[in-house]
Amino acid sequence: MIDCLDRTPFPGRTLAALNKIMRPGGVLFLSTLNMDSIVWRALDATGTNPYWAELEHCHNFTRARVVSLLQSYGFMFADYDRRASS
Image (cartoon, rainbow, N blue to C red; front, side, top):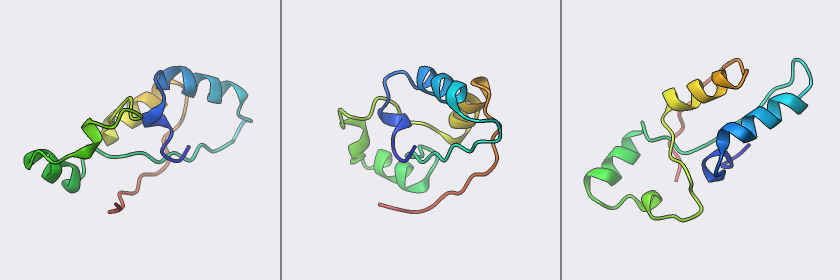
């Protein structure tokens, strides 16, 4: 799910459906914007964060929220990598 979860109106429903159809031992690869990043905080501090105005983004997540959401829908969190990207 590359840049999908933040664009989903009901991410919990999506994760529940994915968990139901995935095979045992399957892997969910997820990528989303990170409100914990230094870039996000810098954009907020200068009032230039474009992600607050993008209509296609329904949610903005922190790392802790993504992990909590995944775990609450039966996923085991395996890895996390923070990349600086545009």
